[in-house]
Length: 168
Image 1: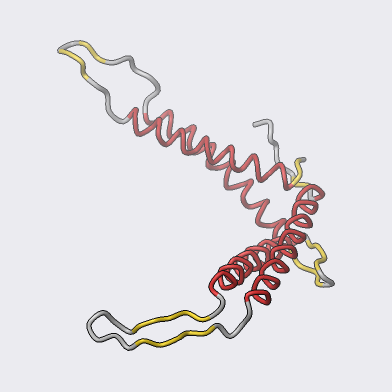
Image 2: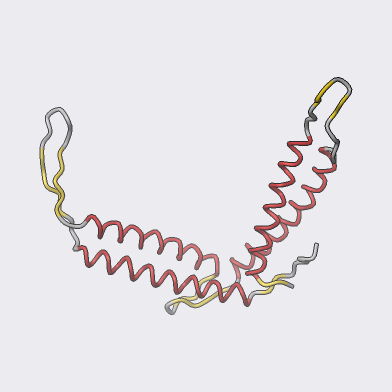
């Protein structure tokens, strides 16, 4: 048994193994001939590497399935709402994106002089419909809430147990 938090790290490690084996297989697909009758040192063939890659991919798929199931079934409570871990992850991403947008708008608040084009420009003023303070406050509030939600997600990830043999 491993925690969901551990599973996320193991999945990353397995994915790196998959990438390394795919690169090794690409390199093994051809050999370099240095001179007539002299070949480079031979390593494992592409079929042996493909078998290893298939085994590692099988582990990746099995672990990923367990992670997705846990994200879809395990819950946490945020601001009075019960969310699955997956929903909480999505909400956190949305909140971070919104926080970034509001903070960007805060930096652009005020009156901006604009023009329509280069050849015969019509000049006009564009005025924000919000104050810098309002946008900044909203952005910081969303950021704080997203951080709090991320902490709850991390806590849940430490509590959820998955049946996976990490010793493989």
